[in-house]
Image (cartoon, rainbow, N blue to C red):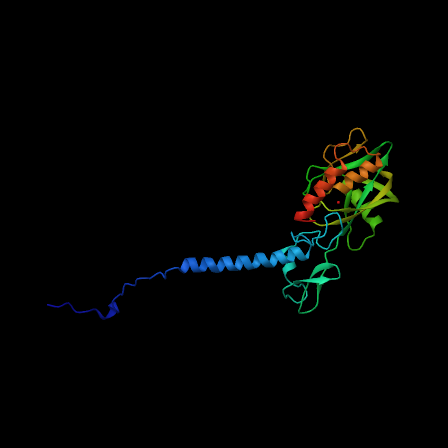
Length: 258
């Protein structure tokens, strides 16, 4: 006797078999490779437009250049309209420009201030607590805020990093820094008069101290600081030569941008 089908059981289940199309993975990999190659080609054009590539007309490292810094992901698109930026010759430089809205991307160095605070035959140095060059020593220094003058920046940075109060004196020098991986820097260096306060490290400094020409730290961050200290002490920074400074600047300048 045949079994009656239960009406509630529903239609019989069908076993499905999935067929994998041949070469699907290879085809997708080829597409991914093409996309990666296209992105790399675009990035190479951007790098060359900023002077950081290996093309024959790359600007020398020891000259100011629009390409002193490595391009970032944001350099691929126009910040005004979002269109793709394209390399464009403008005078004797290649820059990135937007063909849709004519925006031009300029890569300019950032102004910063350093301070030399003499006390007898010594000056103040601080030890960096943050990258880059964490653990190295440098002059009290920092980047300008949008609403302050270089002199105000010198007073603020000195108070934050050393706890000292100063009066900004004469301009000691202006130098260009190429070995800071964050950006290119125009470093404004002042001599300052000590007014008071207690030497105590703060902000992004882990230590602070007074140093003379005979007991300078072995590791001094940034070529601009080494040059300023060497000039102040009459060439007293024996650990780092001008040749080593130039080598450091070239090494960092090829990958990025006191």
